[in-house]
Length: 606
Image (cartoon, rainbow, N blue to C red):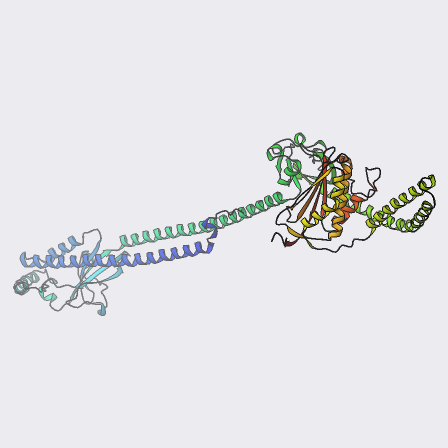
């Protein structure tokens, strides 16, 4: 049986797809969280670095302007506003530790309260800037960088720091003087160097977090879209897998059903022919081809009425009546064959809508069944004849002995040449012939009693030929024996089988009045047993008489009793064998006896 290769997806469990989709979703969620954290860190690092840089720039600008150019608070305020005038900078503010705004990029906020960090969140003097997330009074999300503000403190710790610090001290002294003058003029109070001596000022720079928030929201949207696509694809894959599995399962069942149907149709011992609604033959199984002695090309694709015998084609169901024909026996003649008895059944094929789409014809060859019927009838007739023969023989044999005794007495009383002596002699001969017929009747009617034992069939054939050889030679008939080699032994009753052979030899000799030849051959049969062939060149048997030659009292010879071949048939059957005959008038007759072997090799052949 041919095995079709299966697709891999037919064996993948749907739960694998669900699990894969769940794992992919978990991976996407983890990646989204990781991206969110990474973006937060990136934003914090970037804005913190930018804020620190701006604070240092503002401190440096303030320090330089006030030291070198004598700036007042107004110029420092202008510098603050200029630095704050950037797209992502919301504000710059300088407060004291209590949150009061000393300077602000929005001058209107100066003097108001600023929400400063808690005391624990304040950086140390030497600490870098810190950050926090907050919102402006206007509700804008802000990233706020803050630290202590002291533009006059030295930040360098390299070899050039000492000189710079001294310079800054000188600068602070000068600025103090300038601050005093500014204070006298009402300007620059919070910028005086003394305002930063005790780390009493904080600087804040607020950055707009909106672009980062929008970017994060976009990432979340992208992640949601990708997750939705994954879910949809997973569901689609799951659904398509179920559909594919069901399709493949259905197709596999259909293929299995089709294969089984093909095997059933091919192995069906009866002939099967299917036609469409036009009467064209669509299918013919091997048994149909064997029975009709036609090829597939002779039947398939042709009209049933054109290739089948008329009486068989007439049994095909039509679409008008939907009539079903069951076990109708007919006799058909196919091309190249004799008359074949058939049992034909037919039925119309209709679909779910009760529409006729074709016809089905099933037929069986009844040749063997007819032979079995004839055999049963013959056996029944033989049994009846046997019972009758046994009764008649018993009633006739005793008076017949008395008649023979009286005829022998009168024969001895008269002289040989007298007419009475001749009459007495005829009476004795006829009595002997009648007694022989009675003996054959008893032999035929007597229940079979055979005693089988292993025997060499070649030895039995040689012995039978020796017994009949002289009679055959006196009539100008030659007998040839062909013995098979390495034949197994057979289980037979040698005496009874010898009687069977002698009867066949006698019939052969009687059929060759002008001489001829008898061939006796032994060989192994196709079934593994032994086949004995006895053929003569006599007058043969007519075809009409072949079916009756084993019937009791059927004979074509004027002096025959008609029991010889019946006894032969009975002996062969008693040995579990089979005898068949082939004959051609004026050419000869051939008897074939098939016997089962004992299963043991012949001693001579071993």
